[in-house]
Image (cartoon, rainbow, N blue to C red; front, side, top):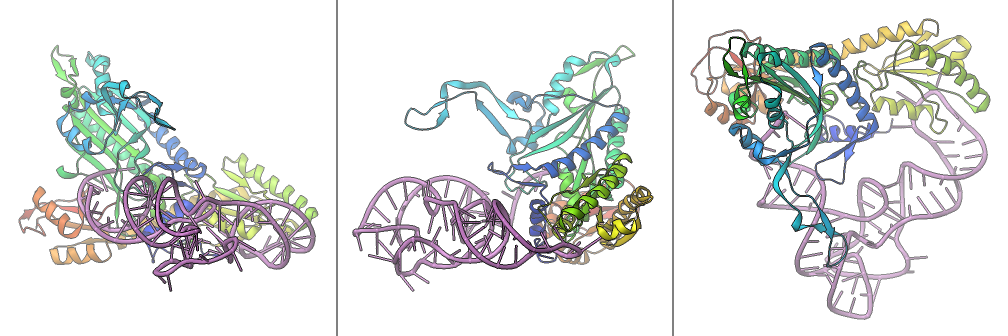
Length: 491
RNA sequence: CGGGGUAUAGCGUAGUCCGGUUAGCGCGCCUGCUUUGGGAGCAGGAGGUCGCAGGUUCGAAUCCUGCUACCCCGACCA
């Protein structure tokens, strides 16, 4: 097989880039830091979207859409929020171009300067809370459970396809509640939704936890995260859910009349996942031959490749292939019959491996004669010949099996790369050497966190919610600690 | 924004030091024939403002000046 990908062991970052390009998911655009998501990559995003959207609706949320542009003044209202995003905002200052009097092309018309600059949203809390102010008067107006699917812009200095781009697609939920407890419950509920999506649909196990103060979302009182371990031993934050307290309600003066006749600020949450999930998916499962996609999210779950010589054979094989296709399609499986006469079977095999199609069916003259097909699975490369009779059942159980298998593989990998350490020496050795998740005691101070980051590049990914109380001593300062936190180098 | 590097066909590159025929090669693309159970073979063909602007020279991909873009490393980050 011709080698088209850099091997993971040679250069992991290069492998990732090669894979995104060669699997036809996305490419760099002529706009610095912004990518073009290609049809195959977008199809993957659509599958992610449709499942998440269903999960949001099942938990009572509705979709809405808020403006791309946010008046600059809105940003100044919540102090820590401004601080968090100010350094990476794109700003619209003018609204008109004119022909360059000195020659060719167009220039900004200086006379068309905006009274107030507009910020291209890096996130929508401010525009949404300025709107919610008008929506909320009474406890009867609450809760508000809204989600929006949108693009956002964060002017990143260094970008990587899907993992960090200047513009990216995401979903942001913004909810308003009458009580603190209700908002906290919402925050927890949504991080659970993300965790469930990651493990059951992406086949990617995650650790749920809360962020330390330094890593917390700008403007939040509490940030929950799901952290996944990538094959190179680095952690990837894959989704976040924030308990915003009354910060935004106070900043935008959103009060409501309580049942008891009082007046109180509204409690808020926000939560989001982005196209970064595609990066997570790639790095969690794929191998040196290409993508490995979980069947539940694969744009093409099954591909049928015909094998034939000459026109006569082609006709027979295509007939048999069409029959198979219709049968599988009727069972609700996303199947593709590759009828291209311009490429040979070997080429197609390699191509679908690169694209991570979970199941491949080959059908040729031998199969037509015997009433069989050759079925190959992407995760293990195992090939088996089955009778065409009852093939749908075979495929269904195979898809289930692949979904489970890649989850278990990822879980096993995480298990093998998770460590408990009690000394800073050991900590540095593991972080510096192979990476992975490291559970260690921490004294709870930002100073220690920062020092460890400076010396080892590892950060506290989260304080796991299921961590047990355990007496110990901070690996850095030696001060007493009550529980272990999760350290790793992160994307 | 600091440090380093690169720019030649759709992609990857040779040529640049030391200026001199028609800028070479691989992949891909097009046409034809033979092929088709793991990335086909042969034959023919198309495709280039050598990043942009200026300068030196009889002559510039090659030397000089300025600009632009991109890549890698750092600080920042879903």
